[in-house]
Length: 454
Ligand SMILES: Cc1cc2nc3c(=O)[nH]c(=O)nc-3n(C[C@H](O)[C@H](O)[C@H](O)COP(=O)(O)OP(=O)(O)OC[C@H]3O[C@@H](n4cnc5c(N)ncnc54)[C@H](O)[C@@H]3O)c2cc1C
Image (cartoon, rainbow, N blue to C red; front, side, top):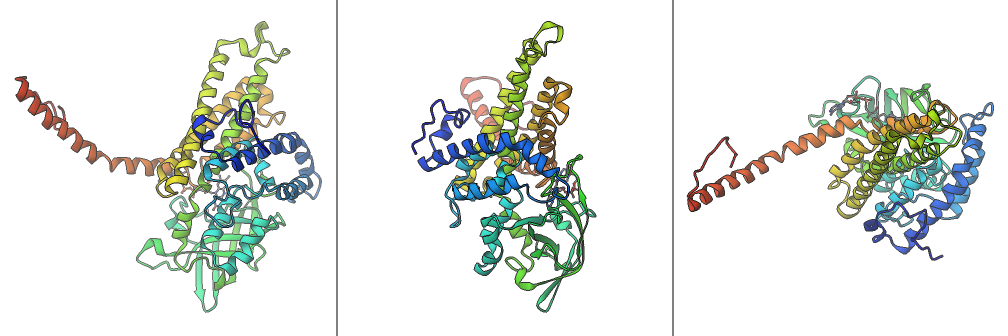
């Protein structure tokens, strides 16, 4: 299939510098993802809602999504997020995937139909990166096949988990077993029967003088003896069924030491490795959410029945300006996300730390603002279940906290930036020195106001 990117809605918003980097295979995939989301996902949203509302079916994957997952897999639209340097990858770069992910973002669950949803994406990447061949066979294969789902469990209710050195859940290694005790908050809900494993971070060596070597990552079967989900937790009123979020108690849960990933004390290496492209997948999809919210606002602008003071909503200057600001904000956020994806492709996740943080800080903040403005333009209905806007807003809001709060990223960026101050001081002292020389040469009086003024 030859796909032309000209006047093609699947590509209209992709900037030229990105189009120039897309390979023929990726262009085809982006087109397929676009057609998939437009025809199979967005129009099916009310059906999925109805299927989740059937008594006794709230925590099972809706049949429509089950069917779509099988179809997407058959069409080669599965696991697109896994970057092309992994041998298990379907072959896209992070930049190419970012174009797909924005389209997926138009519908909250579309990514799930393509096995590209959180926390699966981060977990699959983690397992692909750090597991032995035997471990891959047990956990990575079923996750990539889509026959099992997984949770990532780090956060605890009793400590500040954004600083993972605080994680206190006890993992005692005794003979051939790891014995686990403690409490966890978040991680997908046990109520969903598809949930097969928790990838769990805990403290195995609390007295190790190196705080970065105290923690271990272990795979725990979701129905392990002694593991109890105390309750489902809701996010601003949404339970996000059927995946959901849970609150857990581990009471002498025992798993074999073969379930340790990479080795005892190596959880931080794993956590660092998990923080690559997976960190900006939410941001990629939020660009798609913003576009959809923006379209709803535009439609409202020309709705003939909605005429306060006899004018269309879109005829008020304040709304014309709102539309312009939103357009530019969404396009700027897309550029950030695409730049971050490209940087990760070229330099890797570690070197891309700043651009990843830039996305994590700015995109969800702008998305909450844009979606909020769209709600305002839509009026009362925009805050009800008549539109997807409240769910979109909640999604954008939670991304400010999930995967690490934006404040922590800002703190890190600020600290890194402070380290650059010395370099600038040297540069300005060099200006000053040259200024003195020039004053001497041209007979101009040298005036110095402060230590580095020139
Ligand atoms: C929808 C959703 C899904 C989630 N899914 C998962 C999951 O699957 N698995 C999982 O383990 N966790 C999950 N989380 C939890 C999330 O990762 C944590 O809530 C987050 O890392 C913050 O940890 P904390 O709640 O302990 O906040 P704390 O560490 O107590 O921080 C509280 C606040 O302090 C401020 N703060 C913290 N550090 C700094 C800093 N360095 N500089 C300035 N201010 C700072 C921030 O404002 C922060 O929000 C999810 C959260 C949400 C909302």
